[in-house]
Image (cartoon, rainbow, N blue to C red):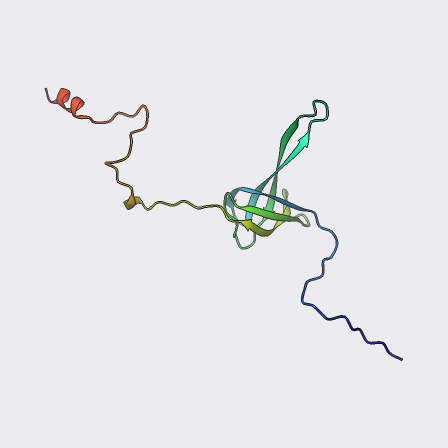
Amino acid sequence: MATQDTTPNTATPKKIGNKNEKIGQVVSAKMHKTIVVEVTRRVSHPVYKRTITKRSKFYAHDEERTAQIGDVVRIIECRPLSKLKRWRLGEVIRKAVQVAVAPEAVDMDTTQPTSGSKSLSSKSLRRKSS
C-alpha cells in the first residue's frame, strides 16, 4: 500500500544551513558592486561594567548596486569573493533620506556668508571708491 504525501507544496525557498546575518548602516558605496557596512553593537566593559559601543566594518557584495550611503541593510555571510569581501547584501531594510537641491533653486542674494568670508558691503565699497 502506497502512502501519499498530504503536505502542500509551498513556494517558500528552503533554507540551506545557518548563515550568519548582520544589520548595519552603509558608510561607503563608491566601489563597483561593493559596499562597506558598519555594524554597531553595545557591550558591557569586562572590567568597568560600563556600556560601550563597538563598531565593525564589513565589505559586502551588492550585485545590482541598490544600496546607497546611509541605508540600513541586512548582510549575509557567504564564501570569500575577494581579499576582503565575505558578505553579500541580503536586503535594504530602510532607505536613507536623500536631500537634493536644484542649483537654480538657491538664491545667492539671500544666502548667509560663512564666518571668515569677506562680503562686499556698502561700507567697504565706499572706502574703495575714495
